Image (cartoon, rainbow, N blue to C red):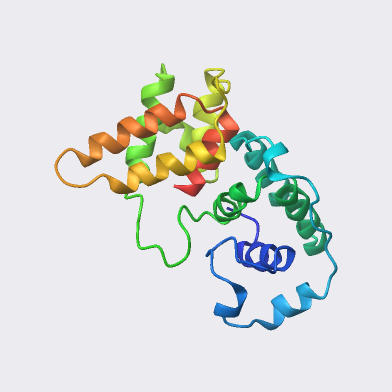
Length: 212
């Protein structure tokens, strides 16, 4: 993901100083960082909305935010965009959103891995869109893997599925992907990816490709 994951890690910690949404550990258990201390000196209002009144966060909204962050150069604007986004969601969704923004499927210290290769992801994507021509031809038109997936989905007019993907859905799928082991694991992961991508728009598929 093109925006600075380092900046986002520390500004998230600054916005929510009572806990690290990336690790789930109290800040007293984390090493002190001068940059975080400077960020913490900036006053940030806390949400007064009850968690129960907040709707589940869609993957589409996080993908849109990621696109905004890629175009943003100001660190203060990065803080505003991420802070506004995280404050407007249920606290239970914040760790997922923060991790995905920096391309991290699991909390820091979690030994699990997705074990999904680019080739596996690409096969799953091609299984959904059924391209009429050689899909590899897209590589000459893009700068990275995520853009290739977005182009692949966009060329056949893919739209978001119903019901829309939520962050909780993505997190559960990641948990299941990481649990696949032994004979048949690769095919099982590919089937899980197909199920996930069948509900993804081009921008969501691009975002997932960068996270996985």
